[in-house]
Length: 125
Length: 125
Image (cartoon, rainbow over the protein chains, first blue to last red):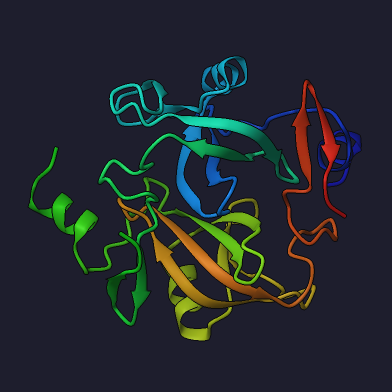
């Protein structure tokens, strides 16, 4: 499995984002100050390009099938300060400064519940 | 879009993991002490059940098409202390205590590179 391109992808300095069969990769937005994960979404090549061009997190909405500027309706943009890339380059970590709650429910983070036995308990406002 | 089941899924206390068309959801392993993201993988229902039963992170290997106990060959298990669930329940955050490097490259985290212009720079050992 470890050929030259795998080695370059995993250990090299070349950015070779690996989109899946649907043309998507995972993007995790993390608050650069608190290190809390704010949300998880998908990016296609267009969303990645727009994010890099503008410094504002863009994703690909699977439900709407189109480019999605996070905050385009709410004003709660995510300003991207740094992009980390994982070993096989199919996941990105966006270190962001959020301009409001990241979750559409109004929560600061989408991860506001914890699994406790078979139930969920709220851990954050 | 907001019907009773959506409201319950997003705001309620019922654990209703939402697997995608491939039967998978996203699982992000986070170091419970440093809050660094260690790795991202997928879980099917079996991997989720095994993780909850054993307290050790299990994933579904898409390349091998089967259950994967993280650390089964390396000994680098991820001990799960808490599971957070996102708003629409298609992503889990595992707060873990890692028993060694989480990345197969030997890095502590899979996110050891940062995008700098069009190149990747190493940010962690």
